[in-house]
Amino acid sequence: MTDTKELSHLELRLERELLIKAPIAVTFEALLEHLGPDMARPDGVLMPLTLEAFPGGRWFRDLGDGNGHFWGHVQAIKRPSLLELCGPLFMSSPTSNNLQYRLEEGEGGTMLRFVHTALGPIPDGMRDGMASTWDAQFERVRKTAESKRNSETP
Picture 1 (cartoon, rainbow, N blue to C red):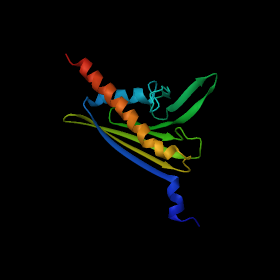
Picture 2: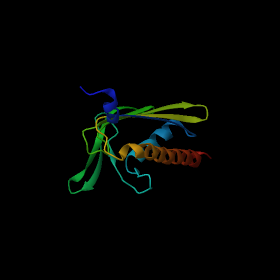
Picture 3: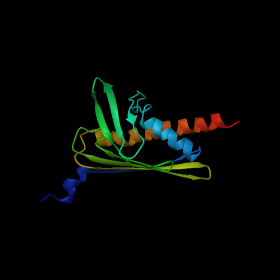
Picture 4: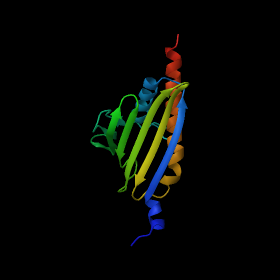
């Protein structure tokens, strides 16, 4: 029998909240951009993905000539308030990941709430970099949404 301490390395839960000073629809579209063609590593190097933004749609990296990496599926989408993705993501291990992006418009902009849950073996070195990777992505989403909001304002 495996005890709970030994299992702790098989679990991950990361939560983030970010206020974005832009309307919810603009923020949702910026999120889709940064999960798709504008996906980038924390160092800013583009790593474009394809996100088929409908239930069951694939999320993958196309390297051409039939090569690439499958990241997951769209588990749920309710424009502009929810996007949920599930799959192995960037891990080449038998790990199940679930990403939930919940958006709620309020005074001052849109609150983006994010939860990344993973169950399974997380490869060495990945756990430590995940928080900074997601934080960098959210900063890009924020900048994109806020700049679009500002460019649409007369």
